[in-house]
Length: 570
Image (cartoon, rainbow, N blue to C red; front, side, top):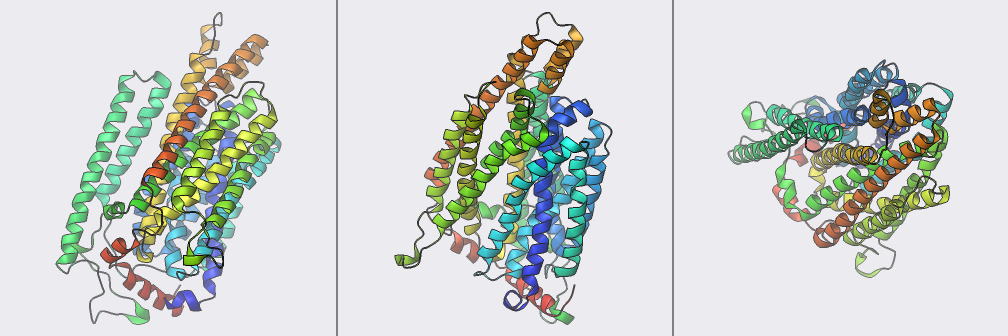
């Protein structure tokens, strides 16, 4: 790949893309801090708070794979610039939302903008960098993602303490402007030599299934698991997703038959090359590709690594949903102090990531080029550490000391920092270089699905635990109804009535719900550790050869892309 070794712009382009990734990371971190303020200012219920997160992550998950296909057709630089502009506009709309409904709609717009930013950050790496350079490039990209965890809470907390809640969304705007300039100037254009058709049916069916599933979980949190509407939505969502898998299998078989008959996008047709190394895209049904490449799941590393990444996202987003409410409503911390109390987990994640990366490297002089630890051992160990920390956190009380909370929170971050990159390495290591773009997009999509369902389910557990232990005897019906809706409303009712017993009851009930949620997260982490030890391959690249042997589509694209970048086309 000539471009990777000759063009000095590739590292500057990586910096531009890293700034784009930072925007997405900052947004998710500051939102968790703003939840209590949003509940008060917009009179948002627990369900609304869940939808502030789910509207973003659900749209993001549904649009990730279509955004990848669109970028291949239109050009990755063009799609990234458009997505950044959309993200900036969505951020401004969030800042000035006047109701919970407006904020939910604006968050959905943000999710649509982020849908192209996230997969493009990984899909561009195999095109710009050689196999030797790629680990360094991926490490820099991962560093940009992790910066949002320590910077977001501090910046968001300071803004919430000194300005109105909309300021946490406005901080995205200048970062987006910087990213727009950097991408426009530094990033070269690239697109697929072939232009596969978009699986419109797959996009619609997968989105409908995810919406039904998540709505059912949130409805169950509001009305209980015996609610007919909630159960019907969960069942319908699961059935639609099963139909989606069946449809994708059919599309995969159809694409395979077309390729075998010579109509697939295996190579550009002779005599159809254009100036600058470009080739005319194939047209017609033969070029149509499934939304999801199901053959990737023939690799144990990809399958189990992706599942473990999804489970990690499930637990992590649940924690970031619950803990800011505990810090602010139970412990009485302001937004800035709440951000400081979130830092130990971010610091633990960074420490765990550094330690895990070193353990996966091969020391000089070590025989056979064998690393100190493999992905199986690291992932299992990381999840086990995380489970132990969550079990300790499940004993949190209303008056637990700050040191206790900081300690288990930091250890949980260490475990997550060890497990998540190792699982990612197992999944990506099972891919050939030519298929890392499509595989990374699929991993991102499943990761976001886990985050969405995690917030819905763990939010339901938290809300149910809170309401089931809340004693509101003797309160007027209106006050009791408000107190049941969320811990923020319960604290407001108790303070308005100047009732210390009611305030203590609200905080105790929420802490019980938090402890129950942490036990659920502990179970997820423990099960993940067992899954990693039982099914994850010892070597991350164990399945590379079979996948590479089946792949014959990306090499021409890389060659064409390299010729375009060398010719200076932007």
